[in-house]
Structure formats: C-alpha cells, structure tokens
Length: 431
Ligand code: CO
View 1 (tube, rainbow, N blue to C red):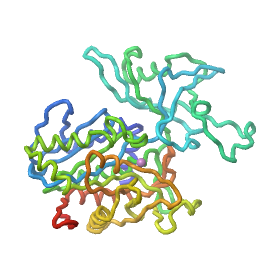
View 2: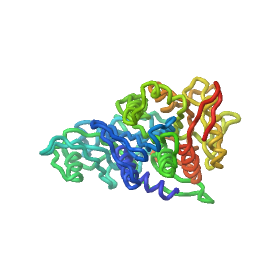
View 3: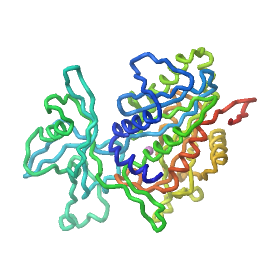
View 4: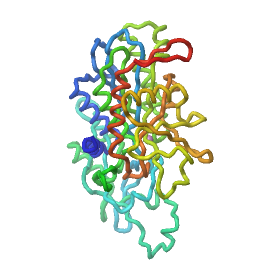
C-alpha cells in the first residue's frame, strides 16, 4: 500500500488537491456527489459524498434507512505550510522574493535549501460567474537559501527563525509586481486580471521515498495527516455495512485550530448527519438517540519515540513505527480517548488482527491536540483518538512506518462495517 500512498501524497500538495483526489477515488467507486446547496434524496444502498469549501469532504453509505448509528472515521487534510500573501512580489537587491506568512506550526529549518513549488486554488471571473480552480505550478520554482556559515558563526548553536525576514523565498532575479499571478494564470489557462481570489501555498518538491535496511520507513511531505486519511479511505472503500452508516470525514484547518466554516469545529459534520436523518425519514427523537449507538475514530498521526531524544517520551508508553495503531490518551481530554472508547477500539483491533500501542505525553510536557475533542462539541459521541507513529512531525519531509497504513486500513474496514449497540448502562456490544 506504500506505493499507492506515495502516489496519493505526491498528487496532494494542498488540501484542495487532496479533496479533489478523494473525490475522484470515490466517484470511481460508485459514490455520487451531493451539493450542500441542493436538496438530498438518499436511497437504501446508496453511496454519497459532499464537499465544503473544496477543502473538507464527508462521504457515507446508506445500508438501511433504519440504521442504528453512525460509524465515523475522521482525519485532516491540511498541513503546516507557507501561504502566499496578496501582492506577493518583493522586488529588491536584484531579486524577486515572494511575501509569505505561516499557516500552522511548522518546523522551519527543513524548508531551507530545497526546491519548492506553489499550489492551491484560485477564483476566476468567467462569463458564467465566479469559478474555482485548483492549480499546481508543479516545477522547481522557488527556494529559501540559508545564510552561509561564514556570515553566522553561531548558525549551528540554535536559531530563531523570522518568516518575514528569512523565509520569503526567491522567485528569480529582477522581475516586477504581478509576475507570480501571470504564471498562475498561464498554468490555469485564464487571464491574470480575471483571478479575483487565491489560496496558494508553498510545498516542498521532494519525491517520497521508502528506505531503511528492510525498507521499513517511508518519507514524504504531508504524512500528517494524509497517511491517516488514506488508510481511512481504503478501509471505507472495503466496508460492508449492515446496520450503521459508515461516515468518512476529512477536515481542513486542523493545523490552525479547526475553527472555520469547514473545520472539525464547524457545523459541517452535524449538518450532514442531520440531513441524512431527514432524508431517511427519521424522527427528531431518533435523531437524538442515534449518537448513543454511534462512534468516532479521530485519526491523526502520533509521535514515535525519537532515538536521540528518548527523554522526550513517556517513560513507559513509547510508540514505535510499524508496531501498529497508536491510541492517544490525555487526562485533560485534549484527546478524547477514555475507558469506553479505548475498550471498543482495542476490541476492533483484536478482531481485525491489527496491533496497537499507547501514546501519552510526559506528565511534565504540554502536548498537541487534534480534531476529536472539538468535533465532539457539535456532534457528541464516544470517540477514540488514534494515529500512526511518525518522526519529524510538521517538517515538510516526515517519516513513518511502511506497515502502518495497511494496519489502519484493515481496522477501519472492520470499523466501518460494524455497529455499536448499547444495552444496560455501561454495556456495549459491537456487531
Ligand atoms: Co495532524
């Protein structure tokens, strides 16, 4: 599955491309796109998806209109990067540089001294109104050269990066204002003056690779979190649901806190589930009852123990790549996992013959959070936070294990085929 994962990653330099690629894969597999702005008619046995903002996507199947719950697999498709500002050219000193700002919390160092390109979406004026297009300049185009060691003898003793000063990449020599948008327009086959809006990002143009003495590692950009998105998607496509509705949710904006109209903290998932209820003719009471028999797997990559920094990991719970799904715990509920959701997920892993391991932060360190707890504010249901172990999180070139994507696909295929039933208080069965 690693070759297919790398093809997906390389074709997905931004969240807009990732969603386009998922749309294509779903349509090849018989899924129909529903527009949010139109009415929905859903058939038993039907397979559907809808997209918000071109950057978040929710897909589902209706095995029966008398479904008992939703089995939701959620992940995110955005990554830390640099966004091109309005009026991007900075022309001075014989160079044209591009004015950028940070999106999310990236590791800055690895962005230097490697070929970068530009991709994203533009909104274009046409005869029929405004039209959105994804674009990818798809060539070695810009670079952030380091300052030579001779001019900064302290360069290897720690460095505080200044995005405005150091990380506006060089586009070329000389040049004038408007040159970037003319290149984007040419690539998109439109006129530069017709581009009225853009969300364009830098990305590292480095091919993914499989390495290690036993080919045990895979490195590429965007493994966080497209590795989970891809594993979820492969499991979703293999699912055979009977009683519950499998829901694949892929959200934008996790890296900036999920609080956008299309992020996990938005109404997107809540809206889609409500519309499924309405289209299936279910009552308001049933709508309020179904979450108790539903479950969410919030999948976002996890930190593998780093061999040079063992002291950064919990003394006992130290995830390793290729050792299976990482279940993440946080007492203060930055991760949603609790005794119930952990038990349900461990039972699924055991049945799928997929290994699992545990991540917790050191008790004296503040860790990250992810989309599960925020999504739970609007759609409240038993949720487990999991991920696949990786190194160099938020570098433009991250490293993960070659076995783990298949493990996720296997357990998610079982998850999306299952349903959760609540019996006496505190009692659950998974069928
Ligand atoms: Co992530």
